[in-house]
Amino acid sequence: MCINRSLIFLALLAVANASTASDPIDSISSQGADILNRAKLTGQTVRQCSCTEQRVCVEEMKIQAKDCTVPCFQKFSSITSRPNDLKKCFDEKDNILEDFLTCFENRVEACVADQHGPQIQKTDIRGIFKVTEKSITTQTNTFQTMIKPIKHILDATGDFALCVKDCFLEKNKSGFCFDRKGCQPLVAETKARQSFRACTKKMHWKREAGELCECSVNAGVEELRQYCAMFKLMGRRAPMRKSRG
Image 1 (cartoon, rainbow, N blue to C red):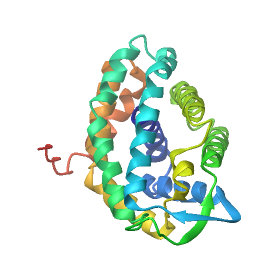
Image 2 (spheres, one colour; image 1 turned 90 degrees about the vertical axis):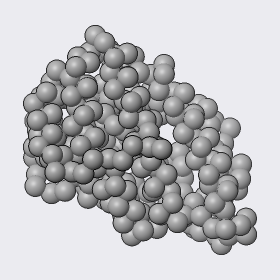
Image 3 (cartoon, rainbow, N blue to C red; image 1 turned 60 degrees about the vertical axis):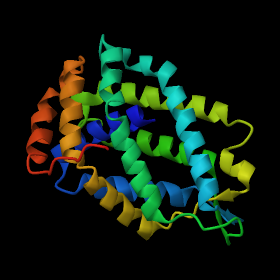
C-alpha cells in the first residue's frame, strides 16, 4: 500500500505542480473527502468503533495490503528493468508513511473510548475502492495531454493499484475486520482535512518526495528526472526530519 500511494503521490504532484498553482495537498485532501462521502450508504447506520477495535482493524488491513504489494510489484517492470531496486526506494520510506498514518489516526478522532459508541452513517467499504478507481480513471482521461510525458508511469501505477485492490478484496471476500466487529470509524470531513494537512506538514513531504524521486530515477525510472530538481528546490527550506528513536 505504501509503495502504491507513494508512487501515485510523486506522479500526481509532478502533474499538479506543472499544471496549476493550487496546493496539491488541498486537492488530494478534497478528493479523499469526496470519495468517502460518495461511499456513504443512505439510511443505514452502524456503531462507531472503539479505539481498540479501530486499531486492531487498521493494523490487519495494513498487513493485508502490504502482503498484496509483493506479487503485484512486478507490474512496474513496464517502466524499469530493475523493479526490485525501485521497490527498495519505497521500502526505505515505509516508516515515513507509518508515521503519517499514525499521526492521522490520532488526530482525526474517529473512534470512541468503549464499545458503546453512537450509531453513525454507514460507509460501503468496497464502494470506496470502486469510487476511487472511477475517480482515477476520470482524471486520467481528463489530463491525457497534460500527463503525456509520464503517462506510462501512471499506467503502470494504475495496473499495480488494481492488482493490490483485487488482492485486498479477495482477502476480505468474507467480510472486512470492521464488519466482524460490527462497527466503523467516524471520519468527519472538516476534522479529516485539518488532520491531513497537519500530518502532511509534519512529514515534510517536499523533502521526502525529492529523495524518493532521485532514488526512483537511479532505479531506472528516468522520466521522473525532470521533476526531481523541482522537488529538491521545494524542499530546500524544509526542516530536517528528526530520526526515529
